[in-house]
Length: 255
Image (cartoon, rainbow, N blue to C red; front, top):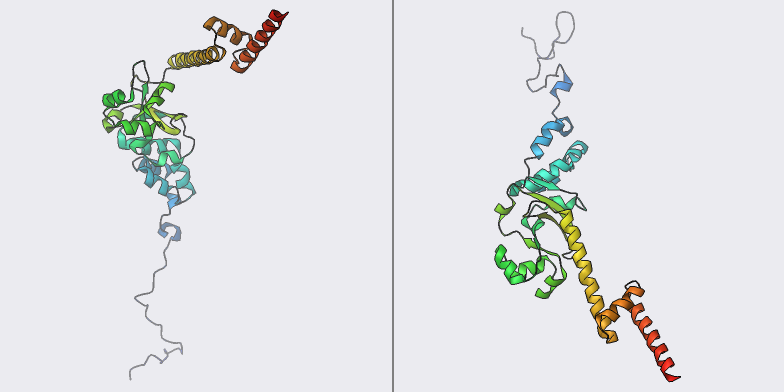
C-alpha cells in the first residue's frame, strides 16, 4: 500500500518534505552578497568620474551621501566642471558663493578691455564683434557716456574659441555689479598697471574737484589750488576758507 502525505515513517516520525524550489538559499557570506552602496564607491574613482560631468550633474551628485557631497564640493572638481565646456585651462580665485560654479555659461566669462583715450562704445563693440547693447547691459551702463568714468569695460564673450587654453580670474566688478571669470588678452592682470590706473583715476578726480572749486569761487586755478591745499583737498572747507578771507578783506577795505 502506498503512503499518503500524512503517513509516518517506520519509526513514527513524519516524512521529510522536499525543499521548495522557490526557497532562497542562505548565502555563505552575507557581507559579500550585499549590494554595493554609494558609501563604498572609492573616493579617487568618484573624483575621476565627477571631473568628467557638467556642473549640474556634479551638483546632483553632492546630494547622494556625505562622501559624495565632500568630493563633489571639492574646489578642483567644481573648477574642472566649470571650465571643461569651454576649454579653459585654469581658473584663478574663489567666488563669493559656490553657486557661481553651477552655471558654466558664457555669461560667466568676460574679456577685460582697458579704456584708453579716444575709445567709444560703438568702436569697442566693433573691435570685439559684439553688440553695443550687450556691452552696456553687461557693464550696467545707462548710456555710452558711462565709459568715461571707468578704467575698463567687461566685454561679453562672443565666441567660445576665445577661451581655449586660457587662464581666467574670478573678480567682482563693482561697476558692472557682477562676479565674472575675467580673461585678460595680455595674459594676466598686471599689478603695476592697476596701480598706475588708480593713480590716473585719483588725478582725474582731483582735477574735477579743482574745476568745481574754481567755478564756484570764480577764481583762477592757482587760487583754487591754494585753498584746496590748506583744507586738505576738502572742496566745501576750501570755499568756506575763501569766503572768510574775502569777508576779512571787505572789512579791512571798509575802515
